[in-house]
Length: 62
Image 1 (tube, rainbow, N blue to C red):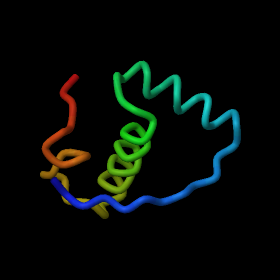
Image 2 (cartoon, rainbow, N blue to C red):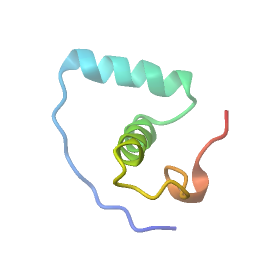
Image 3 (cartoon, rainbow, N blue to C red):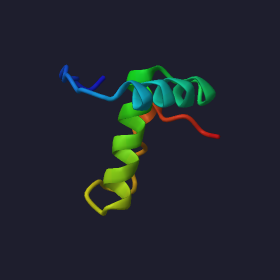
Image 4 (tube, helix red, strand yellow):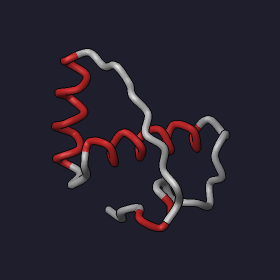
């Protein structure tokens, strides 16, 4: 498993609530959902290799 580093982030209550609902809809933890979204944004921006699924080998298929 890849090493993970803790990182604090400040979010508005509205954004936090929306992310929590979204994570629940996708059957992910809030942390997992945020990491998934960041990986997806980095991949779409061309800053992350397209071959590796978000979250390493633990990505979920839909």
